[in-house]
Length: 281
Image (cartoon, rainbow, N blue to C red; front, side):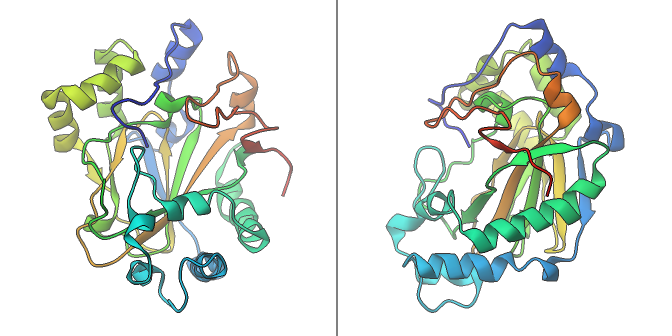
């Protein structure tokens, strides 16, 4: 997530600019830069584990449905900050052993078999909670993770744990349209980011060309990190809960021109000894 004042990564390196215009692995599978994969959701009971975690930490007490947890939460815990993050997302930055084991099993059995190379993957996934009519949400947050310092070679994985119908999901700009904007701004991420927030024509271009992501609970999406995307204001009566994961193929990581460092508060290093998990699982 980003906002109008976010620190945006940029580089004049020829290698960096080349990575923004290359043909990626996921692009070679599907020219839209995104592809949906199936898995057996019932084998990975993230729903129950997330409810148990929030109950153990005192956020909820009796909820049995993940899509109704907002009925027990305080307004303060559901309100997003300038980065579109709420307290429930923040508490899940650190999970527990049960969720960690389930996550590793998901990577090992559902993600790794798809790939054509060994991968490094995000140590702890990012769990997203989109509450009904959440206070503070913006409709202008088109961004990609590269703007926040992630390597362009990363791949994004998105998996919903609740109904991801149109009012409770997010939108993604297909790769060709995202590359069009990148090229239009001469691969300058700072300029593109400012235009998204200040130029209504650029914002309208995104609005007119994005696809709404709507998956079943037994599906997950892998998409190219260059694709611009944005959350949708949840106009429904249900909470959306999903998981974000970033992965990178080891061969591509080994050929990065420099170490990428996040622009956010933690200044994460996108290396196997910091952001990524590097051991076989």
